[in-house]
Each structure stands twice: as structure tokens, then as C-alpha cells.
Length: 258
Image (cartoon, rainbow, N blue to C red; front, side, top):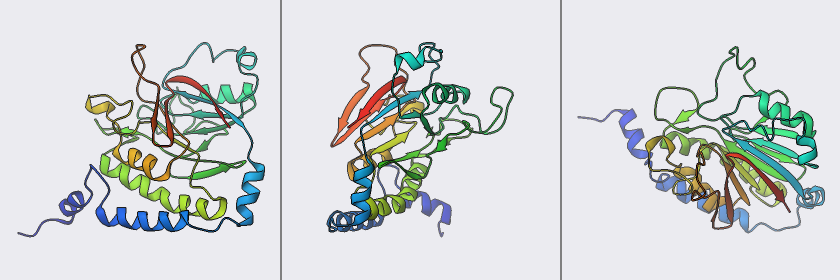
């Protein structure tokens, strides 16, 4: 009996790694881009604009230490506020307003998808949603993927296969970045961690295999994530995967990008 297209598609998209043909295609394109000449004027323009930036990354919990009028005294200079998800939208809005910073965000698995009395609008006001898009902020290139592994019914949760598709949808923008600016990405923003780094053994908090592949192939300087709550000193917040610094931003992290 002939197998259904749905079953064939599921088998084709192995959750442990991207399809072989896709991996080979990506490798060929990436290697070609890495060997491009370095005299593109757009690249020189990008590098000339780039400067040291301070990022305040937040995720998963509202802290009185930050949700305070004193925050502008505690953080004298912040260029970007980045929300890694699972936060009420008023919180990053408040931080951005008092710090006079730009706001970028992705949604977590506990974010609401529609207006509610507690969430009167569907996104943080004035923020830029990084899900499946790449943004060049004064020479700093950011991109992101929302959500976590699907462990129940609800918005912003995806299977491992769907996360692979999300990552693949980012690739054209990254290739354009390489052509225009000489680099794929600087900061990768997700809610869930990459597989095997900062994740946990229970299904709801397992890492995403596509994110690990992304870090290994495109080598962003930073991968910022949330989702993994920290309850003890033994839990790691910083790990290195190749050239990428993976940072769990539960609560907050202040990052200086040189």
C-alpha cells in the first residue's frame, strides 16, 4: 500500500538532523559565500557604522530590580533591549522607555497570541519581532526564532521538524547578509536553547536540534535564549559552542558586544 504524503514528509524531515539534500545544498552555498572577495563597498559601510553596543537581554520572569524607576541609574547606557520571551509585554516596553533603547523580541511558549485584559495588544509596542527575520541594527545583525518544543496544545510551540523549517526559512536572509555585509549574523535570539546546551531532560524543556546546527554552521557571536529557569548555582548560564557564546537570559543578562 502506498504511503500517504504526510507520512512520507515526516520521514523525510528527520528530527535528529536536517535532510541530507538540504544539508549538502546549504554547505555548498555557505562555502561559496565564505570565499567571496572582500572588497564589497556595502561591507565597508557596515563595518564603519558598527560600534560597541550594550544589550540588556531579559526572559521568563519580571524582576523588581529592573521594573523600577531606578533602572536608568543601574544601567547608565543600554543600546538594545532584547526579550527572549515569556514576559508580559508591558515589561520590555517599560525597560525600553526608561533606558531610551531599541527593543527587539521573540515570543515564548507562554506568550499570548491574542488580545486579553492582561495583554491589551498582540506585541510589545515599538518593538521589532525577530521571528524568521534578520535585522541590521547599526551594523549588528540579529535574527530569531520564537517558541519551544510542542508539549501540549497552544501557540508558539513547534515540533523539532517545524523548527527545522523555521531555521531553513531564515537562510535566504542570512545569505544576503553575507553578500552585503560580509557576515551571516552576530546575535541569534530564541526562546528555547539549542539541543544539549542548557536544556533539561524533561520533554517540555528539551533543546532544539535545528538551533544547534544553526550555531555550528553560521557561528553567531552570541546565541541568547530563555525558557530554562534557574534555581541553583549549579545550573550553567554560559556555554561555548564553537565560536558561539550561548547565554541563558533567564531574569536578565547584560552583554557588551565589542
